Structure formats: structure tokens, C-alpha cells
Image 1 (cartoon, rainbow, N blue to C red):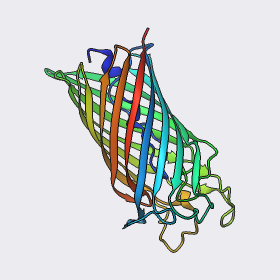
Image 2: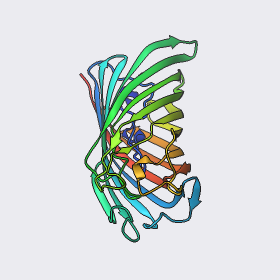
Image 3: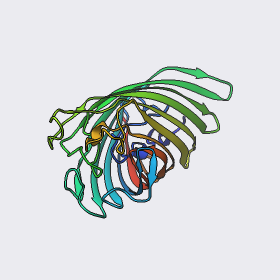
Image 4: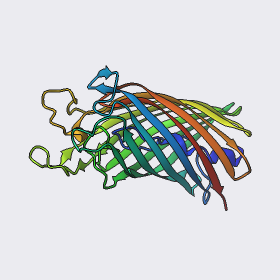
Length: 300
């Protein structure tokens, strides 16, 4: 890639989803050693429907509709030319348009969600006649802050995680690119602050995640279309007979599609827009988000 535009890409790729962790979705673009980028973004997300188990409901239980204001800080830094560190931190304000949450008694919550760190490494870059193929290995994790994890309105599942991802990206010399990733997230336990059941901590299920992205990175703009999905390993549904209000232990599956746009204003400052929607899911709100952000590039 020829310009710093390709290294300032968008902070909005790590969008927070109702009742899931804010994971970092990597790509095959890497900072040069010593270069850093900081992005600030705002996201509005709304959930008017809900998957109760795998059954789509016309309204979110109790809340009818959930609105989220998400303020996000994202930063990356080039440790070497082929190793980049990424940090992501969202602050979420969530409001339900209905009665209080039947589990935690709340109609609104706000707090930092999970701070995430990911180190991505390019073990090889293969040259082709019309472009390059980059292999990517990424390892990281997240730490859950002290929000209430148990309820439909909750900001996340309250569990810290260890995350691994493996993928590749093809960059054509014309600017078009595509990538594909598969990952696995090992979840820890969530605090049972409300003392439900035996009072033991919640066992949050691990999950497999995938990502496909097609886009264009040119001198004057960047654009991509993406698909990602999560599949939880085991545990229970909200509408199952053994569910007793223990939301962090539910299996949360989803598939989403979306678009990202980025344009530079100066050599070091750019603006971004993004949108996405959940197209299928399990034990998760069904809705759409819209984002806008600004990115500042810090070079040597």
C-alpha cells in the first residue's frame, strides 16, 4: 500500500453488540514500525426485535426497544513492520423503552464495557504478478469492567476472554482487496452479583467467530463490505426449561452484514462512516447500528 491512508483505517470495525463482548476484527493492513493511529467514534444502535432462543420476536422482552449510545476509543501501533498492536475501549449507554428489566430491575445502564487488546502478526507476504497475499495470526483478549452482566439490557456478558484469529488478505495492485478470518474466543466466568440460583459465578460459553471482507483502498477513499458471525459452544436458550434468569450463560449466536467508508481530510486526519445490521441470531437483539468517527495518524 502506498500512502498512510491505508494505515489509518477505521476504528469502527469493533462495533459492540447487545449481550456480547466487543471483539477486535483484524485486517491485513499493518502499520510501519513506530507509527500509531488513534480513532474516536460514536455509534447509535437500536434493537426493535429479539431472538428468544432462535425464535424472532416482534419486540424486545420487557423493554420493547433498546437504544444504545456507544462512544469508542481505538488505537493501533506498529511494533515492527509486520506486528501491530490494537486496543479498543467502548463506553455504552443503554436504555430500554418499557418496564424495568425483570432480572436486575433496571431501565438503563451505562459504563465502560470491555477493554480489548489484540496483537496481529504477518508471518508471510507473498508477491504475485498483480498483488500480494498476506497471512495473519492474531492473539489477544479482553477484560470486563464492573457492569451488571445479568439481564436483557446488560452491556455485555461480564466475562473476560482470550481470543485467537487466523486469516489471510489479498491486496490487488489496483487497490481492491479481500480477507477472511476464523477465530476462537475462550470466555471466563461472570460474577453472579444478584445471587441467582446457588450464587455461583456464571459459566459463559466459548465461541467460534468468522469474518469475510471485500473492499477498495485508494488514495482518496476507502470502502468495504463485510460479513461476520459468531457461534457459541453449548449452554442454554432464554426460552429453554432450564433457564432461570442466568443470561451470561446463554448461547449467543449471530450473523451480521455492514459497510465501512473512510476518507482523508489531511495527511494525518480522516473521517469514517459505518453501518451494519444483524440478519440472524440466537438470544440476541435484532437491530441496526450507524457510526461516525475521526482518525488521527501519528508517524515518526
